[in-house]
Amino acid sequence: MKRENGGRLVAQKQHLVRAVPNLGDMINDSPRAKGKRDLLLRTSSLPAGLLQKWSRFGIEQLNSLRDEVESRLIAKDDSFVWRGFGRYEEIEAAFLLAWNNLEFEKHGMFSAEQAAYFSTALRSSGSLRVFFSRLVVRSEGLAAQEPIDRCFNFLRGAEFTFPEVLKAVEDVVNSVREDLVDYSFFARALQNWFLPGNLRTLEEFGIPLPLIQKLNQRLPEENPDEALDVIRQMVSRGDAELSPLEMDILNMNLN
Image (tube, rainbow, N blue to C red; front, side, top):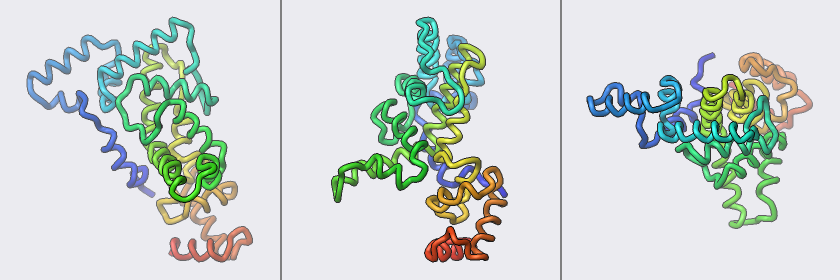
């Protein structure tokens, strides 16, 4: 089964590109642009490959991020040093490095603190219904629209932008001190909205996300094809965990 990380993500990638120097563009541009590129490479302490990989976030901004990381480590500030899922304070510290330095779409998040809060709320909620219920509190009618929109904006950012930002921060931190942090597990989980393994991809085959969340304990996490087979078997035998409406939805989308 081939896919490109979900069609929606391709547009998100294009949206990330900012009007900042891009090394890939400079390579094929005029002698003046090449000279600018060479100057950036000579004066930067970051590896050329890293600069080219993450140039969408701004070359000068990447250098600024490196300087801040180095300064914080010298000051014995290791709040951003973590692996795995990370605690709220650690996630906020990693996002803060990005917020302080990099150029990227914030998706309605006003601060690193807010991005970390929404991330941990999504992780601990277990379902989108609980996530929205926690963040759209004491609001009704039109008053609820703003927090609802903010939740949707965050989820769009979680699909691509925020994980990519964390990966860029990880690469810069590890260029200062080798193998110091590993945000990849958290970044992948955030991109999947904290569904285990590759189950998030089932949405691309017409399985509604609330149903994926409901059934995830019974599905093979790493193989979407096998997970689809399990769901088909549940539908064919009229599994008691599925309501008549859910059966109708699955029958319509799987056939």
